[in-house]
Image 1 (cartoon, rainbow, N blue to C red):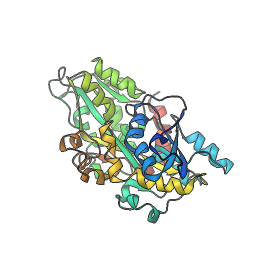
Image 2 (cartoon, rainbow, N blue to C red):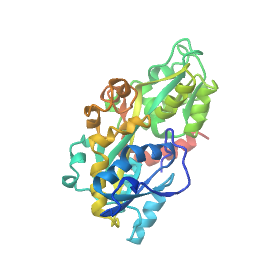
Image 3 (tube, rainbow, N blue to C red):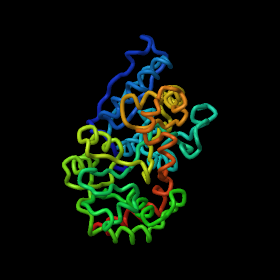
Image 4 (cartoon, rainbow, N blue to C red):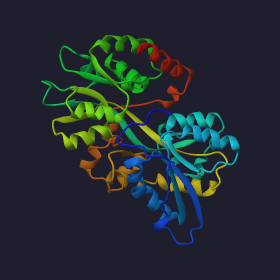
Length: 347
């Protein structure tokens, strides 16, 4: 699985019930799996508890940093113990193509059917959004970067820099820096991207490998600007007022909900999926964490203020400033080859 970004300290696998709000004699149950930490705590309050109450079911939770090996192992038995998984879109595409996930009937999931087609796959639907953005220190920089072209311009924007040690989002950033328009990124011109990366490679102080490291670099002033996940940047900004970030030229990403093939509680899993992405419950998520609703209709519920929307990656205004990552491309042969080429580039 792709390294999960954002403010998510992963916990070891755990199981807990969020059925306290559900009727004592719940009619059904599901097992829901996510990545743990503050993120899973937030979605429990925002979505899982209300969904359990609304549907009258018990929702048991599991938490695991990388769900893919378990998806594969459980599906292979033909009798999985998980029902619904919150995981990167690439896992949903891969799992669907390998016959490990249920192909969704969107006529039974009206909330998904009403969402933009680009926010779903045949096997999954967007659950929440985050962004890869440019974070910077306003105090140490004479001019702050507002685009990847600025980030690459070491003469006009002198300062120490950091990038992620992973081709996903970094290749996109390189192409944006080289003048490719956001709506023309895919298929990625890999040769062009690596040529642009070669240009800035000598000026990169740190190639970070975790969200916590990127945040610490910015917080401690070890770098003046860095690629960073918006949740991490928001957390640093609260503690260090000289730090800020921009959604401009951000790379918008999401995790999606999928259902394991032959899930033990398939009917309730589909009912839950539809409820979890309802505009009303989706609008609860920003009350607890700095990630955006997967369902854009959440912004029309009246629950999310204009100020709060301005802080969220998937608000219409901020989404328009960003490029939506194509997980489909990264799951293709070309994407796999790009990842292999990255390892050689970093040697």
